[in-house]
Image (tube, rainbow, N blue to C red; front, side):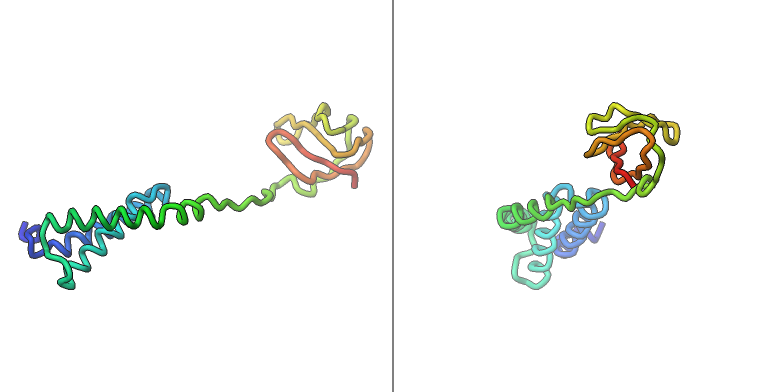
Length: 151
């Protein structure tokens, strides 16, 4: 219990700050920025107390963390939110790519033709109408849909 005395206030704040950052990054995966701002604030306040810039008291720690957390939230919320919402859209490479087969039915963009593959009934679609008996390859897949084109 000696560790929790006022002489160790700076170390306690730095440990809490590191713990908050670990939880934010490892457990939550930057899903919320609240613990990020709080963790940085606790670290900065602990470092300032350790350097002698701030008095090592509970009241100073509360006010300092309140102000630093608020400043961090106001300045970093929008840039971090924009960074988090930057999603890369890329086509999924699937096992169906380049699979070829002979059509048993006419295929068009409506998806009325179907094909059983791997125990699943797939709708077949094509940008251009294809006649039954045409050799085709799968160029793209969606949920329950194979897009094909003539080979």
